Length: 367
Image (cartoon, rainbow, N blue to C red; front, side, top):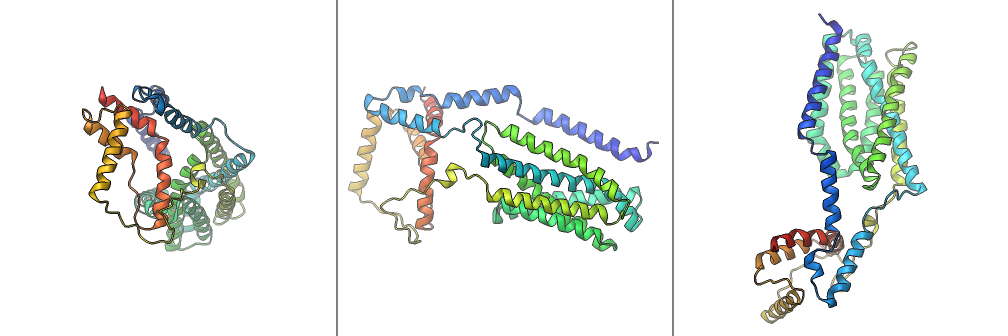
């Protein structure tokens, strides 16, 4: 009854069902975001537990607060280099949109010309390619990104998407056709999962939404341009010309992505030098835990008890809460090598940035 409109109707129904599920289970709403912002702003304030400290500790407490405020992301902290980096990511996504829309708009026509597929077999082909992408997302993406990194995954995924399109342009047998399509979809899945992470990390919290929206606009523009260009050049050679266009656009996207990653602004946390302590020799030897004698243990215990008493923590009455707080404030350090040990010491500095939030959470349990 509906003929060739059936796939479109099914796609619309699935989209409506997905929108309904997102409405039910996606927690990100205006009220939810407002509550999160209130919690963050509340954590940066001095808690009653801190304000009750002695005058001797006021300088330390306010210094921690100042460091926490200074480490917050600044609104629109974009230099010209940052902007150029974002524009390159946008261009990479523009040409990626051309590649994607060419595949979607021309695949059925090319399969008909190459293999004489009807609508049913084209539908089976799309289902098979979707299964390939799902399996790639489940197993290959996590393994590859953990082993080689997100940026490497994005570049390799974009490059192999171009190779898959070029292979498809010159494929005539069913084996080569499905190999090239599977290669392109595996690489496209690898790129898609990694590129989103790169874009999210390219902006701070204050302008992340605007950056993601700008990149998405360029992607949609590419999806508009792709079918128009592919449709025009398909008149010359419907079997090869659209896929040569898709492969070339993907190569340009690879180039833009590669250049952007070369000038990527480094985050302050990644460029901060490790803390160098006197007891680390940086020779690569494993760290061996020290064995203090009973006197040293007793001296440290007495010093800690005196410190907690001076700062009004009431560690006798709230013994478990104080111990839990100390465990949260002191992360475990690596003992594999001295280098790893020194790098883990840097975690202490980063850990101090959330100290106020930890105080607030444990402070509430005292009341």
